[in-house]
Length: 122
Length: 122
Image (cartoon, rainbow over all chains, first blue to last red; front, side, top):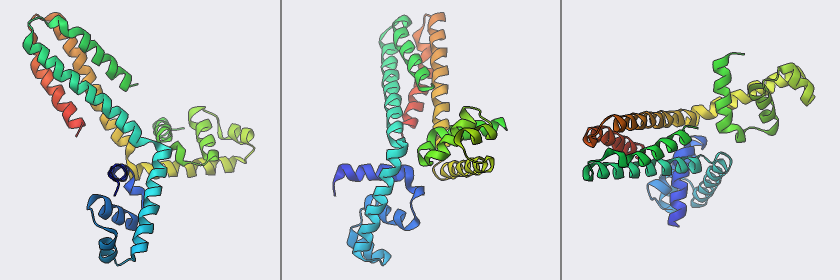
């Protein structure tokens, strides 16, 4: 299994699983989250191996089509990168406080964070 | 038109409009964003008033069903409230810097923000 693809499908599944049928959800979950093989899923769910494969491919396509339309994973990741940036800046500011007696050196960083939050809040 | 409902549909439309048909998108946009009446939409799109009404109701139902399943607006709003909180704290910290010579009073607030970002990043 291609790892990048596995991660991609697993994240899409997190966002959009409620839009799959119960059977599709079960197959995707066993394959991508529980690391079952097609053969093992086939035995467990009592579906042919080809049936498992078809269900998996169909479900993957549905997940990718929803993302293509809604781009929610993309938007979520973009926002997350900003939160990560804010986090790093805050850790930095804490260091500055500990190594300096002069608060005023913090002002540019604080104002930068203020601006980023305002942007995120639209 | 009920204002709360209009705002609700308008936000759902922002998130999920790509899942509607082009006709549904057009009707919802004219009614909720452009503030056209059913009669005006009927004239503009050359559909009966009843047809406009049915399209609108059907589209609203689809948007609400997607939100019921995915809860993306709800999750987005929850995250936004946290960004708002971070923003207010940062504005507060800026005030503190201006009114105090002692950086150390900022430490609890900075550590609180650090914790919140860590939570948001999961």
